Length: 257
Length: 327
Image (cartoon, rainbow over all chains, first blue to last red; front, side, top):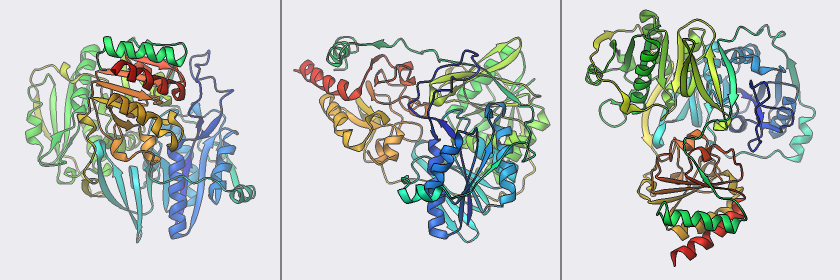
């Protein structure tokens, strides 16, 4: 089974984010970056399916030059090769534009299965996988918690609201968006890291893929800190002092202790 | 530019029933209609849903479209995309809004793509500027907001976050109920049964006080630190999704959109940043307390009380103070 896993590099989770002076995006110069968490689960699912059924795992990533680090880490975990669509300013693409880039790189690969994370931790549209499925003409299912390969088909477990699930079957090739927690993530081994150095990363660009930037149909006009829906009473000082102040409020004001 | 609200129904146990979020979307649709001085209609898709549709007949709407077909009985992204697309094109809807449910997440991007559009997903608010619609959505798990505008031609598609609009603001009136029969072919995707995992042993909804723990706890071995806090308060211990994903606490203790929705007297969030998937599961709590090292964490947007600090120092101090206060 040939599996393509789409991954994205995003600012590390505990980053202190500051709005850029232009107001159009964040100050991203000094941030550290990592693989988008749901994509890490998608990669792991791809690797486990390959271990069970044989085949190949190809990592596909659109992003600036720094994304190469995240791609290397995916190769170190066991992906066989990678395609890096190098674009310094992904912000110029809306979700449809970004998915068109990925689709252009995916099509000639003719995969049996395409995996993505269910959403990105930065923009959080939660759309790339489904758009990609439509562009490629593939059946899809989202927010997947289990994948079972059958003869020429797959049976998956879709997560729904309030603890409900649903099984869904579809023929291959297909596309799935993977939910965090579907599996247990592996760490790269020393041997894996060594091997990754010799694995192929093929570079492409929007121009080389013939998927130049179409005019976006939505525009992000201003980024800002959200307002607070409540006035939070914050207690500071040394931990013991802050804790004492909080407990007093909980006892005499909120009356919950 | 007429407005269309696509309501969601599901037959989970028994006959088709509304997804509650649909009413919030309906209220938002009516609000948009007032602000833009445009007509608003609602649509419901499925099979055997006439009864549900009549519940919309006494709302202030232009039309209620009953989109019925045997192939819409069980949801598939293929059939729902085709049906909504035909309705939108036939009625020339300008702004089409949906509740941001798991089902909508499964087919709305496909629908928008099929029409060469981009849907704005998970909208938390809107405003009208110079007669143009500006949508607000969250970035970075709720740490920042962004204003989004449509730049191309309508139809414009958007899905609205749970709790962003109030369902009790729906205006009564009357609506013409109209059937719409889409042309559909069977989907490649075969939906099977809906099910729940083994019965939940822990009913968090019954707890008066909940102590909930998130990523800030760093590792499984640190869980006893918050367990002590829960014990001191006589509280149930709960967690955000990543903690349960990692197996540090069982899934049945998860609060959030995919876990339990709770509204206790006090909800004490320890090391939880407050991604929206978590907030929707607890923001109805009476008193919310947050302990987090990041003063900009979205959890503080809903907290009544908070301490910005290192939980490994704050929580033990808190346990001591609670013990003192209780004696």
